[in-house]
Amino acid sequence: MTAVTRPPADPERSPTAATAGAGDAGASETRRSARSGVAGLLGAATSGLFGFVLAVVITRGYGTAGAGAFFAAIGVVTVATAVCTLGAETGLMWALPRRRTGARGDAARVLPVALVPPLLAALVVAAAGVLAADALAPRLLRGSRADGGALLTLTFAAVPVVVGMTLLLAALRCVRPIRAYVGVQFLLLPVARPALVGAAALAGGGLLAGMTGWLVPAALALLACLVLVAGPLGLGRGAALRPERADWSTFWRFALPRAASAAIDAGSMWVGVLLTSVLAGPADAGVFGAVGRYVLAGQLAMQGLRVAVSPQLSRLLGRGERAAAAAVHRQLTIWGLVLSWPVYLLLAVFALAFLQLFGPEFTAGVPAMTVLALAMLVNTGVGNVQSLLLMGGRSGLHLAATLAGLTVTVSLGLWLIPGHGATGAAVAWAAGIATENVTAAFFARTVVREPLVDTAMLRAAAVTVAGVGAAAAVGVLAGGRGLPGLVVALGVLAACCVGLSTLPRVRAGIRVTMKQIRGRDDAAKAAGPAPASTKGR
Image 1 (cartoon, one colour):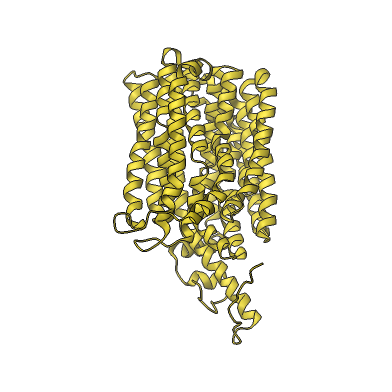
Image 2 (cartoon, helix red, strand yellow):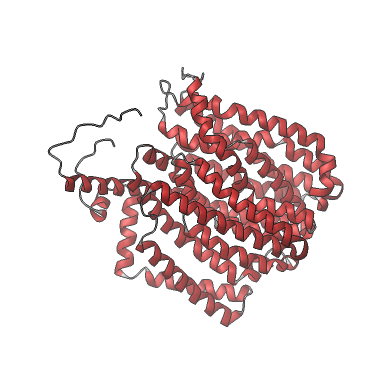
């Protein structure tokens, strides 16, 4: 075993001072995560809004059967992309923060390592998919009628573009401020897609025209990412692009276990859509796809927080600063819980109201919506434990958790979907969600060896459930579970939020958070002792 050389102890610094310095390090990191987290949350909120608009456009424009085929086509490109990226997008998020950028840095050497194998895999999958499109379409896209073969051909042909975009988005998050990533991932893509799909539907275009409108923004995002990452990586300014042999082995030892789990993560909902389409028919697949859009929209807060702080977690865990990483995790879990749980509680209680917005034929998905919304409380309640595993280099443990969830989802799906349609698919997915997240939380606690839950998180969960539950109860009593009851519940929640904002303790907490976001030094005084040292910062 190679000995580890440690710096000499500082005689001027007592254990108490060292503890204070560690506490301030955690405060500094939580301030940094607060600033990144807010940017991610704002972008995720915009993405969620326009994602809902897209779902309305698809369901209103194409009906249950057409929407089922459309969602199945999206599922095909999503799952194919997740498989073809081979885990390299997470590998970039893990590797780039640990390297030097710029013309003299070694970060650019990672690009060929990360891009070439996935793009080759994408080309192979695209070619095979195009050749098999006519044979696959009658089973996968039964609601597409005569457009099935052409729709699936277009879907597979676009896989290399979407794979390239996904990988460059990961690089963009690491080498540019988060606002650049937010602009592409959370603004360009979600805003352009409903506009183009809606234009195709209004013009009388079929599913092929609509899917083209969904795919074109991916090509635009790919070009934007190419321009944005070139400068920081020193491309065209002398940066070395030829990787060393160790670059390949180090990167792919991490990325390959992530390849399978990335496919499972990205395709968790779409596996359900495809299984439902095959086992129960396109109408049930359309209902389940509409329900899934709501469920995924509620998860965007956690996604925004995850992409905001993943490079930071990689840097901290790479240095062995587990306490600071755990502090960042706990803070962002509270944020995600407070922002996501009200959404899922309202989705569970007022599923009828939300699905009525898609059309009366989609209200058959009320039980499915309720089941999945409750399952997502577990997903958001444990926080981004998957990021802790991945950014800590433990992609194998993450794969074990995702495989456990997939096994439960597919096994129950094959059993329940033929007899129960969309509701059976929802129960299967809900069980898979709970299995994966509980397993990942256990692994993360073992790896980080720091508390991932504290009293502040438990208090936030209890207050959120009590407050939203009371508002929902008032809404149901006043107007039922339809739109009138939802409007009443939202009004009660808004009034409660305004009232709470007048309480001194709440206002003090808001002021501290705002100082963290702005990066002002006096936030450190509110959080803990003054720093004893800034060494290593």
